[in-house]
Image (cartoon, rainbow, N blue to C red; front, side, top):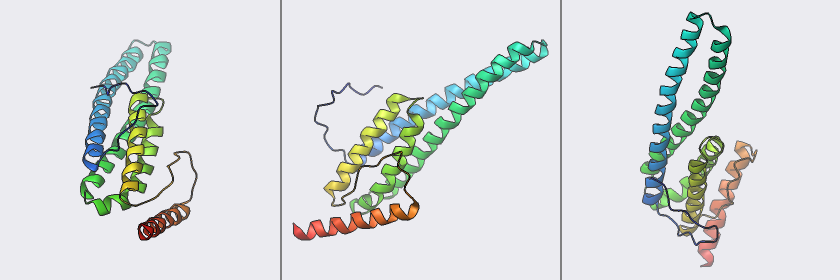
Length: 180
């Protein structure tokens, strides 16, 4: 199922927790299907390597082995991203309560950023959908009173720095609620 094409200047309405959960499950299902397809191709390629060795055709075996090595690298990245999404889905299901959702938003955005980066060259559509979900999670956290900076997947913050930013975000949200 493809999502409708959207222009960059179109207004994107914020998604609720249920919609975010639904979209994550859909993306994860697509990735799981892709992983199964690649595992099937992996088995086929490995059989071709074995067959080439049995025929004593070392050049052919080397070519298949190189292709198999590349496939394994891509398969590892897909599997990792799929597992990240699975963990996130479980976490969202566990914190459907709105008050818990705001405190879980920052770590969820971080995981989405990592998964998006993992998929960027392999599955660009899924990566773009994860980027859109990050935006929706940011909008959701803002609507429940947690202010945060957008996540930069390439940032190299230490764990301590991340904790400090999360504490500052929570404090800013409390101050913003007092002023309202």
